[in-house]
Image (cartoon, rainbow, N blue to C red):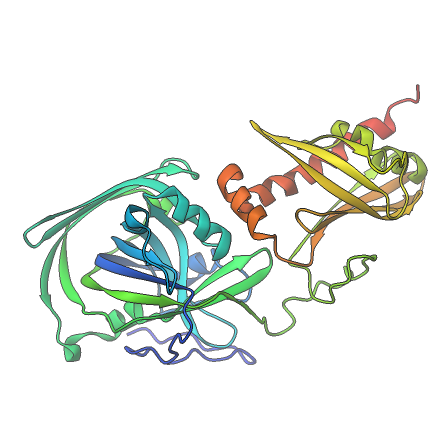
Length: 433
């Protein structure tokens, strides 16, 4: 057996692997059943898996290896406590690619690389609430005696990815025959996820799994590659279970240790945004432009011409009879992404010619800011996008439905910031008419 890695000084050691849940979920926000579940796991280099995790979560290991699993099963009767299940919308096949992590407090949990389901609405709701990478897929589960066949083909939003798994199920293992590795892969009492730069954690509660050994008869999959993982090597560990009924707690923010939330040099923000916490999102892009700060400022602060700069914004107009930038002035922005169009209401929170222009968007709680620093005969412009609070639920569901998820849209916005500054440079350096 390979020794486990030494825990660095200042890092909380991992809690023990326990077959029974050490933390009961007393007030679940969601109930569901995980049934007829096949489990196929491979060993991976811990560094490969760690690269998939956000800062603050560390990969969990057994026998010196990280473990990644492909798990198809029936999701049954998703419901909110006190309410009935929603008929066919509440029961459907699901296929997960998952690995295992430890949070800053030493608690063990699951990290989902992808979750494919056949129901679009639950996928959107889970993306918006638990920030999990749900995908929409065509799936089937068939039983023929002791043989189970699971098939999946992804439809949205991550392109082509599929799996075909067939297993022959053996007898249930007595509790004393369940190996340490089996417990490591199944006794997971929480799930971790990420919202912007924040870590989220939700407790999971159920009876201990009844584990069966299983024989892998067929495997053809591209889900691991779609999740950013190399092809596995070695023989997989194959298990099967009739399933458990599950209680899931409310997702909560995880406090990072060792100052991981700190962003030195980025703490100067203007009223009216007064939240005293670390920003949920904080992106910056800088570019040098061969023009004076005043000239660059005048182009940026002309909201009626915003469509010349932004890849997503198509234009803007001042509101309330205002015709120029000043603190407190409001303007309406119009936006387009493919066939999707929407508008935003924005309030100017900084307007100092040649130095600073910033506005906050009501719908998303995001502050966009442009700072201008003289640099010889030019200007260094820094565009920043900062949010102190989570997006409203409506905005998160909209992003999941229309834009492939908030994280996908955020990636486009970051790329768009660079494109905006490139367009700004072309306008500012062009000869004056």
